Image 1 (cartoon, rainbow, N blue to C red):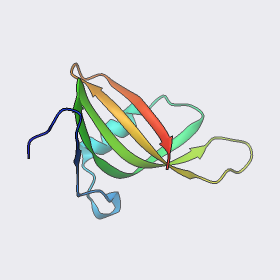
Image 2 (image 1 turned 180 degrees about the horizontal axis):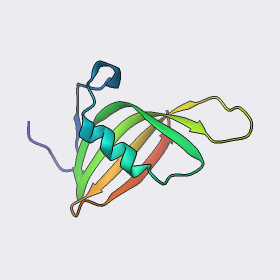
Image 3 (image 1 turned 60 degrees about the horizontal axis):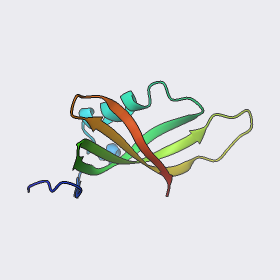
Length: 96
């Protein structure tokens, strides 16, 4: 299957509990959030990738706010951008 710029390629191996998420997919997510403060994000599903000026990777993640008072975790969609020169950044976090 050829990747079309701007189109999402859906990865059918999405459940990390079934060993569907690769080490590279986990590593990209964890590296992008390495110095993130205020919340803890845990990847649950790898959705797929999108060719742009680089490569975007989409995930479903659990978000736990770091707070002195208990807060229920929420599900979010996270998009991690990997530039053509291998720089990682978080390009989107949105509630599901």
